[in-house]
Length: 284
Image 1 (tube, rainbow, N blue to C red):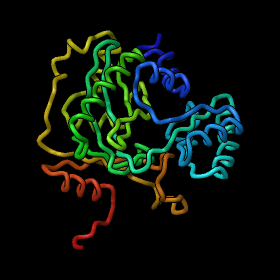
Image 2 (image 1 turned 120 degrees about the vertical axis):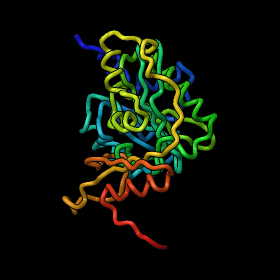
Image 3 (image 1 turned 90 degrees about the vertical axis):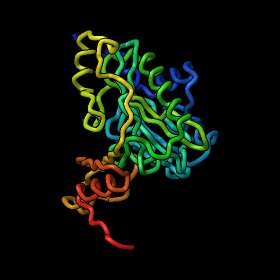
């Protein structure tokens, strides 16, 4: 017996095609895209959408096989490789949102009610894997109306996927619109960060929910307002593997993370950088 979110729901969220259709059904905004099962189909979709494209295979972790494609030659090379990565699954092509703000949400759901643990604003633009991005709690530049949309959308998706436990959802904000990027009906690497910052024991409550408790029976789940800032920063293996390309992209490179917490965002960011081992300038 599998506790919590069913394997069918997890499979559904990982199947890019099924998930895309579900978002259309729910009326949730996505970037223009399409599904390709062959190199010919991929070229046809690219012609219709235009470049740059974000391309990804289904059923991958850590952003493996994800890439930003700028022209047909890159797409041809990618399509031939991706078909080898997951030959039995289709490839998803989306219009890449340039200079978009990315954010993610960790939420709890009991199949009916949902609770938003935190909205985290990424410091790097969309297109960098969430595990490689620094992020801030609470968000700093996202307008209240977008936060409201993100919270309502998160609850709708959690219910639609019949999540019992934790869900992590990633969004991009571009030209005044909120787009869904992907949903993962499981705990993400940001859960410990959110728990430490908010004081809400998310993993413990999620476990209880998976065992049958309802969110409305959890008095510790209440709206909160933070009087301080927290910044997560990724830690990279470049000192151990100097030949690894340090340019960040959709495939995850980080091997760990640290957190800075302070009364102001600037100081929290400084602490996070220092903890990650960055040499910080003291002037200029």
